Length: 609
Ligand code: AGP
Image 1: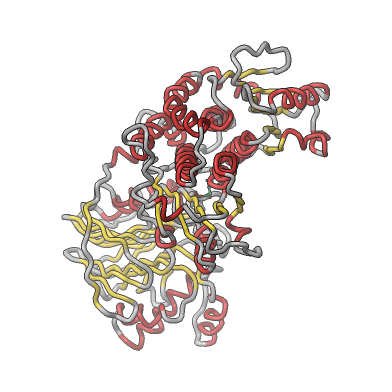
Image 2: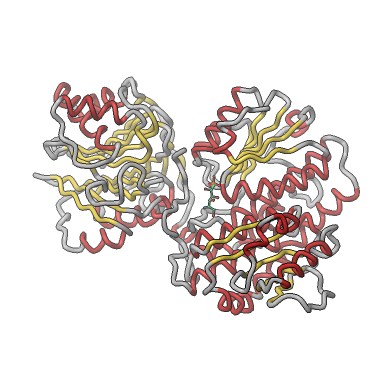
């Protein structure tokens, strides 16, 4: 969380930083700020709330004589979202300015030490300790590089910094430890950012900074060092992404665009993992070697990625008889771990930066488990924890609410399950059927998406309700968990998912005429009739019923609103119910006037535990 950016070059610094921060807004939007080093002074601008507030302030700022600047977008951890807690933070003499992503875990002890030495703190942030530490060390060394090297030795936790000093123009120092940072090299200057999107269009080559490294950016060149000050040789790689790949196109929101990208992503995944339409190739992994001897699988992930893992458990266990445990990474870390050398741990993370998931995988590694990571960002931190990677190939997901990455995760997990069954010699007719049925899903998904108008009309009927219940059984329980998560995170409606059979053990007490209930019913599933009964029980208590039903022959006498989805087998059904629930959530949030792409309190990359 938080995004940082720095630029030194001859383009308009303010514009480059604003554009960069806008593309990092998915990382937080509690406040933002910038610092510019000019000929005689450092100017700092900060604003609470969305980046637009800073943009307005900057309209009257004269930064034309500045060729370097740093910027920050904040997701508050230590200290409220006030202007005094906004970055950049400055040294007491005003000459050093610094932006930070991460958490300095020992900040309290450092703060007390610095206060005893006369430093007077202006904010409640952990970051301010870093800037004063550097100031203190600068007084000794009179060199920003040396001061930074000395200061980082005191810091514990996670930090990516951009640092400038008024007396050392044409220089930004970028520092990385446990927080992502990428350096961009361009013809009109050099840049640093928390993530690639901020760099697109400004630079043509990139270098990923590794932990315990820092870079010194000048307008004409960049040099790299470790925390002991040893010089490092790095080979830049081309930045292949175009600005179009991170634009909204003709869609009103990134979320809507990303929902509609799903059928093509499915096609892309199928041709990547099954190029001949028959044989599954897991990204070059020696599947026999990796999978043949596993006795159990643990899936660790958070949020939507966890929901994808829960859906996959149903399919993996059914097809392979290998027991699968699905754990929220934040819980896994603190539980007794049954992980051993015969365990395959699947880490799932769209961003590849989720701190809980990364920590869980590091712990699993200590237990000698094999680690397979599904991620949408092959350049992310999680990759370092993995024995092998299964890319999600969904393209950059900008909207904070995960949509296309969820269905991409499902597809890759299905393919993994089929391959595992083959490697273990237990693949049967059902495995084969599912493998081939997957190829029908892109067209079926397009059918679902083409009914958006009808879904919008249903959404209009329900936008005024303040609570929702979602019910499903088996794999559809994972589906409704994801549907409820989507609704609550972007509309702020209280939405809870239940296993339909559990309803009468308590949650049914919630049902009355003010409670819409969304139910998933898949034709030929063993629980179809049972869920119909559960819905009858809801109807008897005057609940409003919205049914997602895959049976075209079903004669509706029960549901207030029936949403038909194409005929699909139960195992693959989450790929069709997900877009319906995503669109329902989207249109309800829209009716309520919510900031769909940037819901309150959330950030896309949750880089703190
Ligand atoms: C989903 O819409 C949320 N943005 C959130 O639950 C997310 O899935 C979770 O934070 C995990 O992120 P990751 O996949 O990047 O690890």
